[in-house]
Image (cartoon, rainbow, N blue to C red; front, side):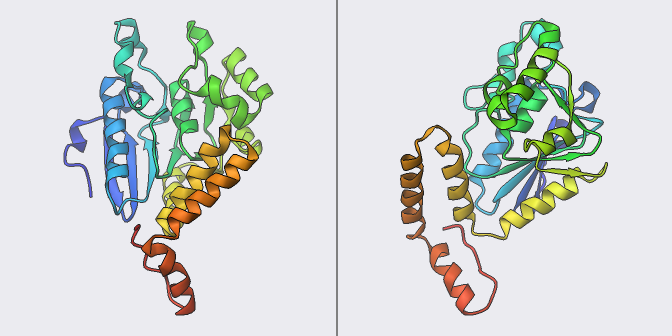
Length: 262
């Protein structure tokens, strides 16, 4: 399934089996986020969330840069508000509530808001030459689309401070070593690897995948007992589904499970 309006829009979508490939396609502006990108990315997430046979997403960009962040021309023209949406905040994505996993496939550098889009994804696959950075202080701006709030937890306080105070970008390989990036791949392989990773996820029971994601992400602010209880509650809900019955039955019958997502 390919979006019929893709050629005219800076965000393209393509269905590959149970995976939705979402591509930022504004290479002449280094995939910088303007109003159309924000609206298009939010619409792409809506498509992922609302389509029953889509179970995971991959988000990438065209050209040499994944995303350079906010379109500074739009900001200087007084259009900063249009770079956010009510549900998704910056780029229609960084605070968007989702149930399905999205993998960022970094074929180029992820800078400023582009870094924040990447870390708002569930997993990150980066090519070996890629850097991530939040250079906002160089323009008297703040990385308030998720980096300052989340990088201390995701990368550690010292690394977050280095990135925020120097404004310098760090190699994806260093960020892989501390756990911010999931996989480093050769140049030209980010999308291929990210789609393959998404396909591995899609081989498993989709409701169980979503529940596992929910327990981990929603459990961030919970006590240990609350996390245990959330897990029990999600397991009780899962036990009422067709897929819960299908998993053990497929094992007994020595066949691949036929997941329905219900």
